Image (cartoon, rainbow, N blue to C red; front, side):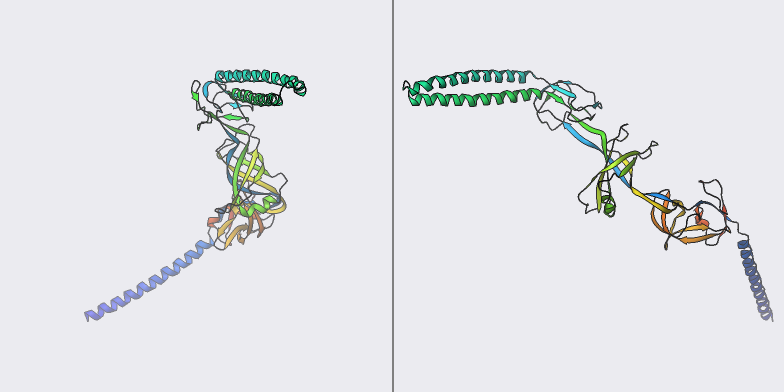
Length: 381
C-alpha cells in the first residue's frame, strides 16, 4: 500500500512539472514576440549616392630614385690638396669639387713642350735641306741616295713632331684631371677621402657621390592588366601624384615619363617611373611614397561612400534606407573603390540613401534611427 501511494504521488508531481514547463515555454515565447515588437531602431549614419564625373585612377606604392647618381673618382693619382664643398651641399654642374697636387703634371707638360720645340726646329732644318739638295741632285752635285736620305729624315722628324704634339696634349689632359668638377647638378653625399691623403686613379672607393634630385624619379610597379590603359595614353600627359606617408604636406605632382619594355614574369607587373620637379626637396632618394596615377575622367558615374559597401559570401552589397525608415539589402556591382568612394555599375541610383556605419546590427527590414551630423551624412526622409 505504501509503495502504491508513493508511485501515485510521483505521477502527480510529474504531471504538475510538465504543466509548469509548458506554461514557462508559452510565457517565454509570448515575451520574445513582445520584445521583437518593441525592439528599438538601430542607430546608423547615412550618406547620399551621387552621380558625378570621377577620375580614372589607380594606386601603387613607389620608391624615390635620383635622376642620376654619379660616383666621383680621380682619373690620376696624387695628393688630395683641397675639397671645395661641404658634405651634403647642393652643387651646380661644372662646380669644382677637388684639387689634386698638380706639380708633377705641370713638370711633365713642360718636358713635353720642350721636346716638341726641339723636334719642330729639327724639322724646319730638314725641310730646308730638302729644298737645297733638290737643285744639287739635279745637277749631279750630290748623289740621289743622299737626297733620298734627307727626305726620309724630314719625314721621320715630321712624325716625331706629331708624336710630341700628342704627348703635349696628353700632359695637358693629365693636368686638367687635377681639378675634379661636378658632372651633374645635385646633392653631395659623404666625403670618403680627406685632404692630405693620397688618391689612386679609378680607386674602388669614390671620393664622393652626387645624387641629382631636381628633378627626381618615383618608380613603382603596377599589374600588367593595367598596361593597355597606360599605353593608350602614350604621347599624352599622364598626371601622377606622390604622397609621403604620415606627412601632412600636399601631394607632389609629376608626370609619367617611363614605361618599361618588359613585364616581370615573376610578379606579372610592369615598372613605371614618374618625374617630379621636387623644387622644395621634399622627395628624397630611398623614400617610399603613395602613388596615384590619373588616366582621365569618366562623366555621369554612380558614386557611393566606400564605407557603405559591405562584402558577404554572395558578393558586395549595401543597405539602402527606404522612406519608412527601414533598410533594404541591395546587391551591387562595384567597378572600383578607394578609401573614400566606390564607383558602382549597378545596384543603386543617384539620390538614394545608404548606410555608412552601423551595418553590423542590421538585417533586411530593420528600422533605423539616423544619427545627424556624423561624417556629413544626410538624414533620410
